Length: 65
Image 1 (spheres, rainbow, N blue to C red):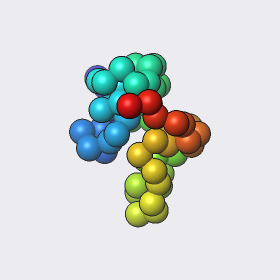
Image 2: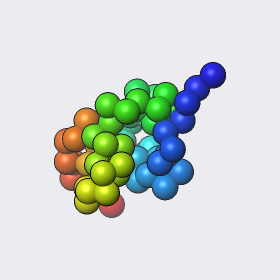
Image 3: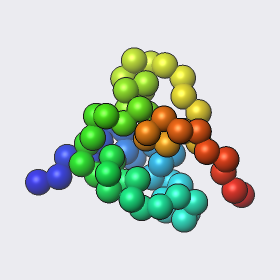
Image 4: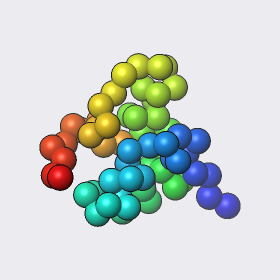
């Protein structure tokens, strides 16, 4: 049984994958298995701001329109 991240449905990573802006690999390695090593998850849990364009590994990327 997979454990999807509790933030998945409101996470920009989900949208970026759906729009083809980033690889589905990000969802597979973090979102769909509830990987709490995700930097976005950790910051969200602490109520700390993080930009939408931050990947689960903490890297900030430039988004193409």
